[in-house]
Length: 116
Image (tube, rainbow, N blue to C red; front, side, top):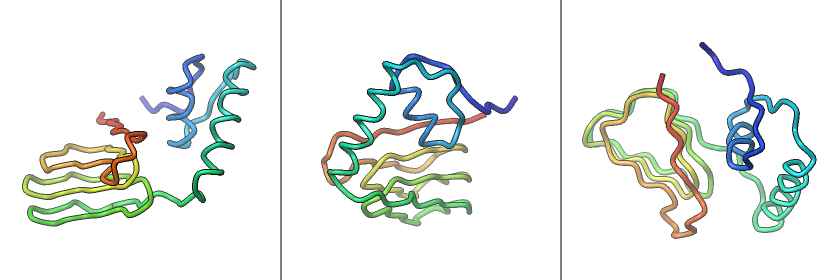
């Protein structure tokens, strides 16, 4: 099963779907207003920077750092590796290494796991 979209009145789910490129169906007006306010405040804080995408497997004792952006991991992360991001981290495969999100201390970023 592949998710192509969501319908929800929870702001967190709508924001995650938009960030992930998943369609949002039937947006209630209240969610649309909150999302617009959030997006405009984010643009005022800092310029948007596309996330760093890691396609290949990360081997033991490798380090990956995503400065001033989010990080998307599309393959396995082996034990002994370190993944660091100034933003959020999205994981789509098995993780055995260490993940560090929000290393600048902003406390607004998260980990998202979508392991199928």
